[in-house]
Length: 339
Image 1 (spheres, rainbow, N blue to C red):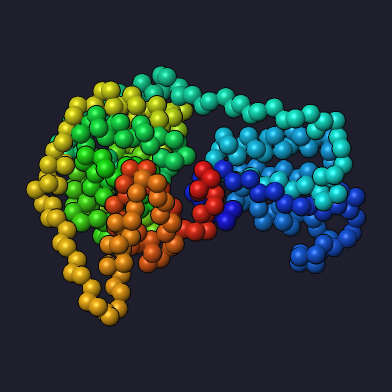
Image 2: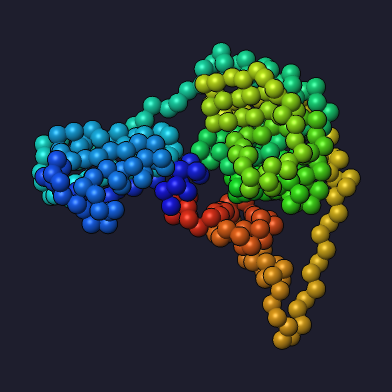
């Protein structure tokens, strides 16, 4: 669960009971270990999948360590690990003598000169394209840029798709929404439009073997603008850092020329879905009939929870109404819902 939260950029806080503070420096062996007198075994396991680790084995700096762990989780949107010696929670200490003060984290800001340069370069790149498109990636969540992405889609007129792990982060009721871009297994006619575009803006993508269908995407780097939570790369270069995705998309929406060509091409080739035949009495339930009924059940107050595998593939075909939540990979379910 912690590793999954790390990969999905979820600010999960893992709190565990650690060894008795009086046992540090001894040669004692702990239960549920590999039988060595080494208290760092658990810490080493969690280090690669957390962005900060706090080992609280004395109370003098406990308040500071816990504050830093929580603030780091919120700032980095990654899991943190807090180990508290099992004999300390009931021990009073002056640093914990009053009610906690509410957190306030300074907001991250874009470098204005870098932002201006990135927007200028991107506008020049996209405005010369004939049929540009936009694709939403899963890092839209950590960048809190979903609204800015939707506003850019409306202002630019570009056709819009989402990567499979970004489903639910962008409203599927957007006027020029194509569906899921997933290479050869994309929503019908979506891959044809995205891969034939002469420019594409990917906001928060993760290109791994799963999302790229074994790295089979027919995309060209020189045609892409890659927008990450704090960085923008235009084609094969240049690249701009210290830029918040939300700020970049907002500014870009103010300057791009409207271009609906890609969506007009989509409408020329799009064929409406057929109607499923009704099941006969006593006939075994078919998957497509089951999902037809699930589709009818969805409302803006619903949340779809899709397990990895066949459930996920079938849930990708659902059309989510505005406000409907979507979470896949149950290993991260609790953390994703909390985020």
